[in-house]
Length: 94
Image 1 (cartoon, one colour):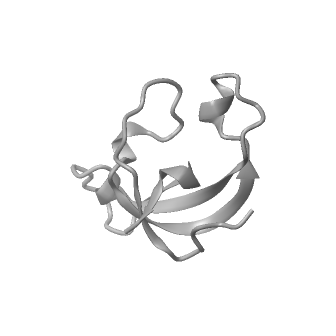
Image 2: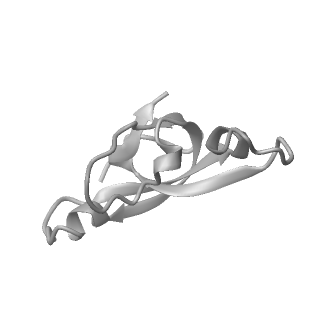
Image 3: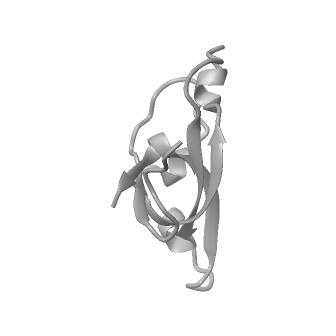
């Protein structure tokens, strides 16, 4: 499968709130980060939760966010980060 994004790309998490089993945390939607790793292609857990097992696989990325981006009230060191694994269909070009 061809990845839409590469390591080092600046991205934004889609700001969507669909019902059901969603693996992307609410608190990170709409926030900007950087791709740090391409983890591979996997079945989409959002589709698996609905019993859909034959859908095309989705690329999973590790995305790094500044803690201050994820949690605006964070008062720790500026260099602190949060890494999350996010599927490609949740990512947008920043």
